[in-house]
Length: 594
Image (cartoon, rainbow, N blue to C red; front, side, top):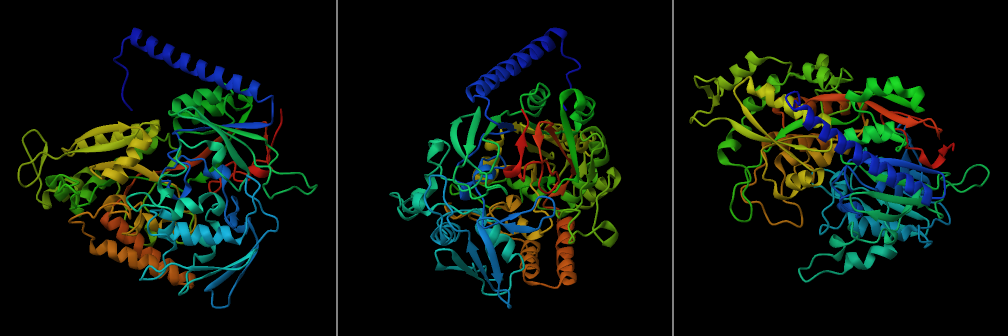
């Protein structure tokens, strides 16, 4: 955290006055919004960033609208992780596990009233997800075997579709069933028609400049308005298939407002003043909010360790862009690609202090990319390598790797270059900035100078994904839950989230000089082997080898796994909270008491 202890009282008053005015204006707008809504049952949420797109397959942002407007053939129960019927009312798996037949519910409709049939499933998979001209991370997790083959999908009749795989694929049902289905009648022409460069028009369709009412959905809600950098408003989808036991249309809650509040401190103030119905509780705010639960008429739910991961990663990419310019300065690239350098960094990070100061003790040290509650998690007792804080070991690793220190204690490489790099961080999460600031201090103790670059989330993602010209970043991924294959698009060398050594995406020119290491290839092999192994004991052993390689090579240096904490207003009824599903996974059956 950047210290403000030396700021003058006058400066502090100006800052506080500005913040109070901003919250006051925001509250005014929200109160006016509720008046206009004529007191309809509604929920008001907050997002740390504006949506990057309304085009689901192209989305790379953690902040989106899709959880409200889309669902797949099956849903995952937020408490148990079990698969449950959604658009499909039933499914059958063949004895050899290579075929799944889904039967759709009768009379399904899109949010514009058009029928939703097997043709939409065929279109979604064959023309979007399996279309090599459309770069989407969905395709990464659907590839099967060493050849990376995709499943085949065929229509049996208007209500039945059959998925087939060329070989056994353990996550078959979970991924075929859980992926969002898209409307053929609205998108088919945009997929099939191309621009003057031969690219599908779909690639530029349904951006955030599109009228939200034109975005066709199939889940609980449909969008009605979007004011950039302010809010998205959703209304109940009148054609959603769910009804309660008495035949009433679900969801009960008629409206959802998604406020874009790009700062965790500002979100906290908005929640405390009653303007938001929920809040992801940051560790630094927990004690304050806990004291206010009764008076503030909310409850803080705790679901144990969060399913996600936080880390720092160095850019290991040795490629040059289309202009012949190295993505990473060659001197730095040599450091970053030295495994001893990465291990030294890991030993130099005082994660216990980070857990205490940044997370207020509300978290655990993270040592694996696999969720600690997954049956495939490899514990340190079972052989997982860990990097506990040890400055002396960090320095010895650096010296053995050819680095040296000058009389001022600054770290130099073998050629006398000062070790300096830039650490990227997104601005919206205060905890991330605090973590980055501590990393800066920790690495100064082994002579490394770290420059911080804080930017908006969408700009940060664009730099990682598009330009690829970065040194190091602090980031996180949402968890894949108990099934590790959900992170294949992160670890696969062809994955769209393989950030530490990102290859060219389908719509991009080649990356000259892009190299894939042997250990990356081995991780590819292990993920494929695990996806084909039905024996749970053997599958755990395969994922154990993957975790050992990940912790030895450290493409991601893991930090802290925070506790899953969420504040929810007492007026929200039927909350069934878990770290896996959060507070609103069952929003379709929730009510609000006004």
